[in-house]
Image 1: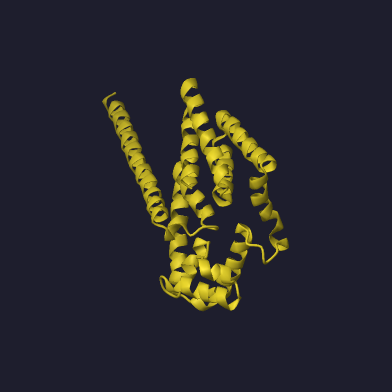
Image 2: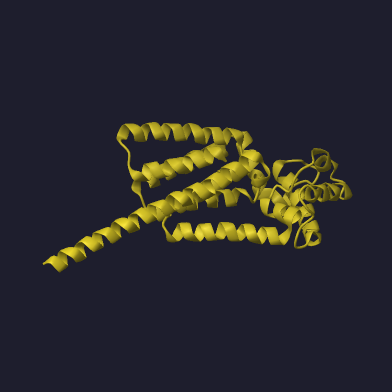
Amino acid sequence: MHVSIAIIFSLFLIKKGLSVRNMVVLLLMDLVLILFLLIMIKKGPILGLVMIMSLLVVLFKNRNLWIFYGSIVTIVIGVIIFHPKVNSKFSELLEINKNNHDELSSTNIRMKIYDCAVDITSDAGIFGFGLGDGKNQLVNCYVEKEAFALSDSQYNSHNQYLGFILNIGYLGLIFFLLFVGIRLIKAYSNKNYLALAVVLFYCIVMFSENILEREQGVIFFSFFANLLFLKNSKYLNETTIKKQGENLIEELNVGNN
């Protein structure tokens, strides 16, 4: 996730405009980050990054970004096609309904987890089972369904939204969605595309990971989700004050004339 966030930030540097030397250096650094991301074969962050990059190139309509985006997508597709291990990982997504239930691939594990998580969400109620107890209920479901490999590993819900329901209930999920929704709407209306991209990226990855149940996840999400909007608010205030000052000067000049 942190690698993907770094690449998203680099897109705004490219859009801003850099010297040829700095552009080449930045592209080489991004290439290293992309290859590192592919080596780790984290499907969620990779797909989330591609989706956010697609959104930004459409919003910005910048030639340099289109070239960069096309290069990155070509590299990603090329590695997925020609690298056997990466290819097998992404091929799992196309065979979700065909997966052998005894095979413990990353995708198949998640499907088994989601089956249990969805089954017990109706019992979670408005306030959920409570922090920690939600995971215990999930593990109990693994045992009932004889998914002992999952119960032995104590897997969490691997979906932050399902995790909210299990731990703090539907009420907690609603509050979180309101928190995120208000920020996304404000970011789009203020053309604060950096904040929009970062928060939306986290929201996408939350479909496959419990980001806010990890220390580094909640720290980085909280940091970016608030800092980027604080910076935008300050910028808007300074811009508004400057514009009001210019209007006042014009009115004074008109009055003197």
